[in-house]
View 1 (cartoon, rainbow, N blue to C red):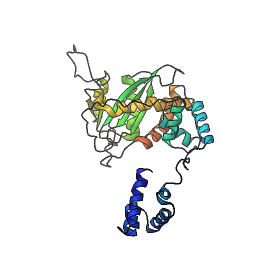
View 2 (view 1 turned 135 degrees about the vertical axis):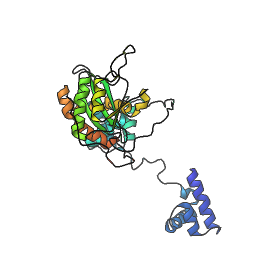
View 3 (view 1 turned 90 degrees about the vertical axis):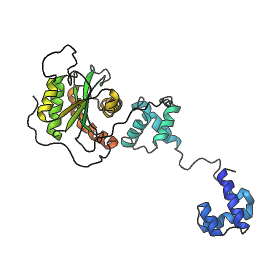
View 4 (view 1 turned 120 degrees about the vertical axis):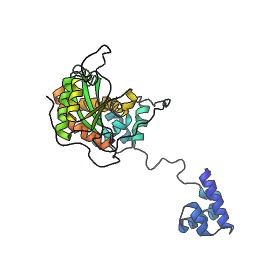
Length: 308
C-alpha cells in the first residue's frame, strides 16, 4: 500500500471503531460523506485490500497514444531537430495542432537523442537593479553580432531596443555592421513609431562613448550621444554586461528563436528580415513581456529633430 492508502485505512478504521464521525472522517480524507461511506463498504467487504487503487499497474488515462508520439517525433525530426523542447512544443501546437504537454515533448526529444537534459548551473549572484517603473522611462540598446541567416548569407548585426520596465522589444533592425549610421536609422524608426524615451542605456561601445584615452579636445560626446542629447534623451553607459542584463538575455533568446523563425519562413536577406521583424516582435512580446509597475507611457510624442 502507498502511504496515502495507509493513511486512508487508519481513518476508515477510526470511523468503524466509532472514534470519529463519518463527517469528521470525510473531512480528513478530503472526500464527501457519500464517498467515505463507499470506502467503508469496500473495507467491510474486502478488508484493507479494498482501499487499494484499482488502477494500480494500469496505464494512465492521460497517457499519449503511440500514434501521437510517433507523429510528434516525426515532425520534430523533420522540422525542429535543433529547437529546444519549449520552442518545439509551441510549433507543434500552433502549426500542427498536436495536443501534448511541453514536458512530454521534452521527454520524447531526450529519448530520441534530440535534447540533453541540462545540468543545473552554479548560481552567480549579481546585485539586482530594480526595473524602471513605466514604459519608455529607459530603453536598453545593444548590437547583437551573429550568423543570423545560418550561412545563407554573411553574418550581420541586429540592433536591439528593449524597454527596461516591461522587457518588451520596442524595435529591431538588421544592418551589416554596428555603426553610428545604423543606430541613427534604427533610432529614427523608433522615434517615429513610439516617440522619445526619457533615457537610453547602452554599453561603452564607440558609437556611444569616446574611448580614446589620448583624446584631449572636443566635448567627449560621440555623434550619436550628441543627437540624443539634442533630442532630450539621456544616454547612460553601463559598466558591465550584467548591468544591462535585460537586453543581454533578449539577445540570447533572439539568437535562438529569431534565427529559427527566419529559417522556417525561408528568409535569407536583410531586407526580407527587416520586413518580418514587426510580426516577430508582436509574438515575442505576447510571450515574454511583463506588466510595468506604472501604466503611464513615458514616451514624449513631440520630436524636435529627426536624425538623418
